[in-house]
Image (cartoon, rainbow, N blue to C red; front, side, top):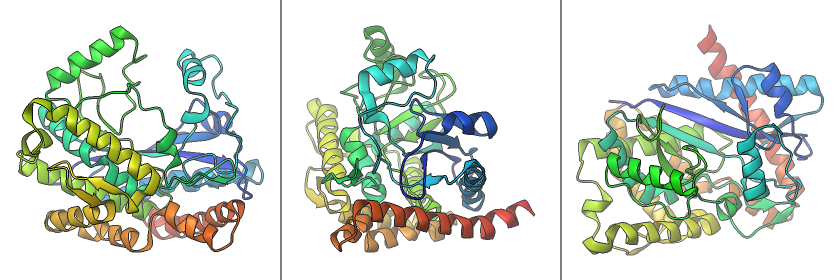
Length: 383
């Protein structure tokens, strides 16, 4: 029983030297399937919801391959990996749509703290109560997915001290989001936020995970994990997705796997306690990713992020194997062994490379990897 999956991928455009250049206006006008973000320096594409990982891989790579061809036609432009303006200006907003009032609000309220690139993973769940239960579980475990994907240790040419500078500065909105106890609770809470103005519209729920659908908050059909930094390697992205999907299948098979039921925190304060614990875990992971010391939602015990991921991996491996996706899950072990992108880049910097050299090397490496994938994966798909 595989669930449907789709991705929203935000990426920076720029030069092979690492300079971020805003080109989204031209990209959106000339290429199908791309949409603009408030700042023109990144652009987004969305994959269709699919169950099969082999097809998802092609849908991840093909638009990027087409975009790279288009950028080359414009001049010496390429895609720049990472989730922050690693070498770019961090004090100026480059509006992609000056006439959009929501974009005006974002620029005036948040500035360049929102000019980040990331990946949102959407998993289809049609039953609203199962979806709320899934959001509760994934919310308290969302820091683990950031730990695997951190890719923003640089900002404005400097080492920030955080593995995910993106999540360190990203303005989670509203500031306090509870674990939704039911679909009705979610609807009531959303309506209150909109009435109070803490949310500008139904899209303005910027938390690590949220329920999503065609008419939010009433018609919902998917879980959206928003915490992940941009993962340059599509194979690694599918591994993280397989970990998430296997965990959700486990939850569907065992509804008792619910933080509001299983946690040992006091019943009267459990929701608030779990939110506070999770917020602290998110902050720790933004700083240290896989090396962060976290507190487990079950009983508050301390546990390193990489150990927690390893435990989760072992727990869901039989489920992944039974559903034929264990081969897509297995690259998680490589991330645990070799580190996420932020950790690998920081090792290169520690060995003597400048921030610019690390970024330039990553740009070239990702371009080569994607060209090989496009040749091996997408051409057979099209045949």
